[in-house]
Amino acid sequence: MESSLCALLLLGTLALQETWAGPRSMRHFNTAITRPGVRQPRFLTVTYVDDLQIASFDTDRQCLRSGPQAAWMERMVQEDPWFWERETEILRGAAQMFRVALQNISVYFHQSAGGVHTLQRMLGCEVSPELTFQHGFYQFAYDGRDYISLDLETLTWRAAVPQAVNTKRIWEADRSIAEGWKNYLEEECVTWLKKHLEMGKDTLMRTDPPSATVTRHTAPSGEVTLRCRAQDFYPKEISVTWLRDGEEQPQDTEFIETRPAGDGTFQKWAAVDVTSGQEDKYTCRVQHEGLSEPLTLQWEPQSSPTWLIVGGIAAALLLLLAVIAGVVMWNRNRNSA
Image 1 (cartoon, rainbow, N blue to C red):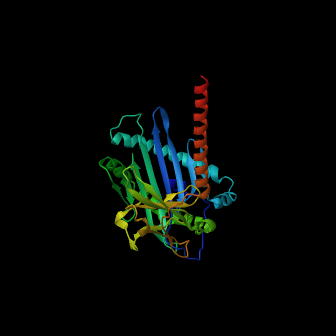
Image 2: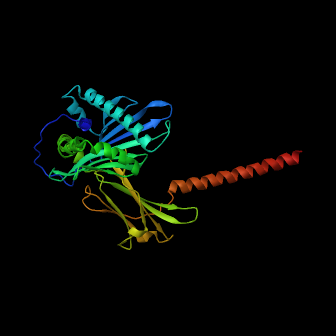
Image 3: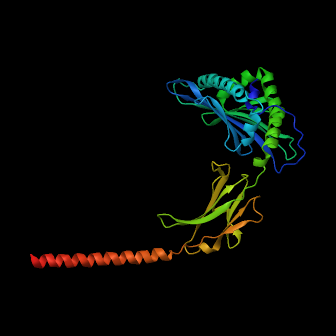
């Protein structure tokens, strides 16, 4: 069983006494991509605990790496010097499994060889604040569309498209496949997640409060938009809302989903269209567990700095002097001609 693919730390039994705020999760994302003219697909794996990347693997680089924010990974690896090498071999085996799966699925879709196709897998587990198992997920997508998933309650496979019925029939013929993944998701995955949470609690349990700004944007058509941007916060959960005269405006607000900033923090913004001249009626409210109280912001027009005004006047005077000097020189030249 390939379940050790997801074992990114040494096995161990944990006895965590504390209760963690909110559910916690560990997720693994595997992607295989076929490339024209290249026999072997590219295979990539990214592993997350909550919203923090802790490890990645890429067959083009042939090495398993810890995430930039997961310092505890390196500490654990020091206890087992062969850890990276062993797990790298396991992931190379997974890459071969994905290569075969891509070939089979392309036949099910009656696709010719040589095209660009992707096979993705997401698997992982979620635990309660008391660190007991809540949910497990194991699902595949092909070319960006749902393909097949495991129902942990019935230990059956759900085919999302007609072509996946072939895979469903093969996997359900061997019930040990579903049983093995159920055992991994409900037992082994939870054990690893607890170990990550214990070793990385200084990072995973931190709260970085957001900073926020409000900016004004004018479209070529003249429409005015106020945008409230929150950034530099962790964990991911945040609320950014627009209020007009104290009343929330959810139906008029455009949101983007919370996005990673690349440094272990997150960012999010919300925009609202307003009538020019009524900007002072709108307030942005930002709520996050790292804040002792919500942030409230309004757009404030930026007045031109004094040095900019003085500089502009000086530039205009210099231009005027240059024009006068040019006229004088032109008259002299004309009179002497």
